[in-house]
Amino acid sequence: MTNPTFERIEADIKANPVVLFMKGTPVFPQCGFSARVVQILSHLGVPFKGVNVLEDAEIREGIKAYANWPTIPQLYVNGEFVGGCDIVMEMFQAGELQSLLKEKGVPVSAEG
Amino acid sequence: MAMQPAEIEALIKAALPDAQITIEDLAGDGDHYAATVVSEVFRGKSRVQQHQIVYAALRGRMGGELHALALQTSAPG
Image 1 (cartoon, each protein chain N blue to C red):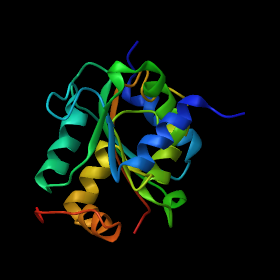
Image 2 (cartoon, rainbow over the protein chains, first blue to last red):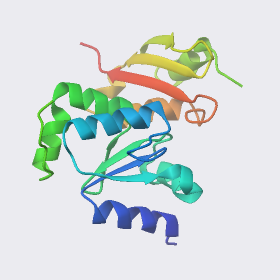
Image 3 (cartoon, each protein chain N blue to C red):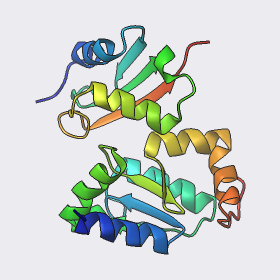
Image 4 (cartoon, rainbow over the protein chains, first blue to last red):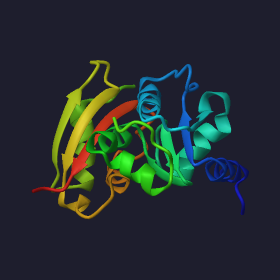
């Protein structure tokens, strides 16, 4: 039984090295947690694709089932779920996010 | 219907009997909390797996009644 929503999600996270499923857009985040992850990615100079779940109810619910993760935002690198706002912040402060991105071949312009 | 700190603690404790739990009400509105959870169950697990264990303990309330739970998890020691 294939899940069309999962297929759409997979297409997105495979086509883009860094994908952030978020509320709002990178330019106009509409949730504090989503905004914080956008700030971290922008601070590191990491190019990413923002997917506004507020404009797509199927993706908004589907992504939670896909990652077995109940909240938004959700960060994906090379198709793998990295975490939500807490985990991305913790990894950033520990320098782990920078090393993960480098390891996955994603350009990071500022150490931060 | 917001949640009370004691209710969150009880749910987590039910799933993780050895857990040391602290809960802080961030906004006073009953649905924005910060919690730290220390349990042996987390040893050797990734952060994502650790948080998923806590979310499972909250039996579906995470993201619904409980809008925000800033979570810090770790194994003891």
